[in-house]
Image (cartoon, rainbow, N blue to C red; front, side, top):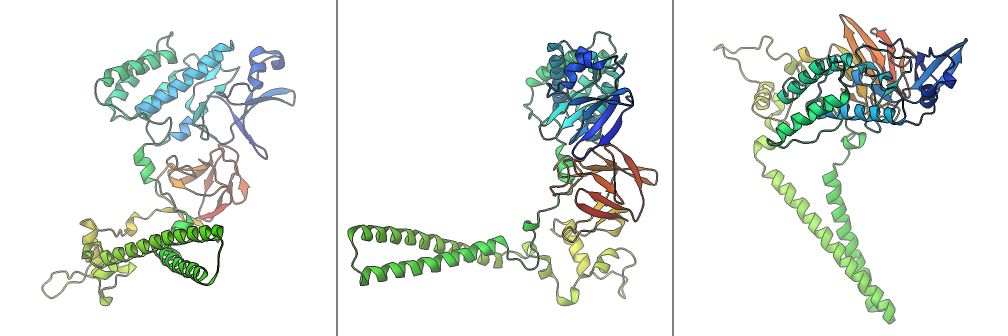
Length: 452
């Protein structure tokens, strides 16, 4: 494992590794590395501090393979894409006569560029490892989708072959290709993206809706606004046609003016037809809603005023219900709504026993969306499908920060965010882990929260 340190300046996040080469400025591989000609590898600069040489790798807005798949599993397509891109980096190094064994294949140092959807390699001139593939293969074996028999079979083959001294990533790609040929005669499979999280994870991620999609403060729904526009268009068209008729009857016009007037009349007629059609469609939908069966109407219509359900009734369900004289429980409005939910209704009630034990409460006036830390590890960011909680704010990075739990202690880790992760006003260094306690103020970019 590399002894890396991290540093953040005004715009960039850096991983710092010591350079033990004598006169690194004259070393061919080091000179080629700091020239930053390779888009497939982390950009690097050489700096001298107190007489020692250090390599500063720019890791801004990039996350590691280990962080990306923490708590998640690889699919066959994702393993194939990872190995394909690593093989491409190997070829790129070989084309420039650089030592391929200096490419670090540790999961915590294989980076992923979220904007380009590409893996980025770390070339470290001082790197030496007797078994360069062991850590990566162990990681794939641990995080593979065990339900995919095809993937399990090929990963075990790669793992066994990795023990051989002549093994390379190209051998792994060959095994993957052979497995694909075996399955080609069977069902056709969808070509999956490189690193996008499985659908089940993407669906479960609590994506917050945009402000304009919420019906706040009595805002008129979109369908009603559309119907009002049809009425407005109809009235405007009628007035336009009346104006054209008035001009035609009371003014003497030239041939060109008559042609213009005829064109305006045709346009007003089309607008009138469109407006009337919209009004009729809107009226039909309202009649259809009136005739809709009771199960499809809003739940409030099933309850009389005396059966109004309070939050206390819902949360106290099952904790000592009142009984009538015969010993049978009388069904309240809350009970009927619960039965409707169990039979396919639309209303969802949340039991207080399922509430998150740890929560971040929003402190900003414009941000009223709290974050429930329902599981660990728990990531926040703005990239849908790759995080557990989506924060739709420009100051938040794609994968911004992660929460982890060790025993009863919660840790907050910055994931190389651009605008920083803060605890009580102090900015965390990239990959820095700090313990948080109730009452701590947490900030992601411009979004402020209080952990309680």
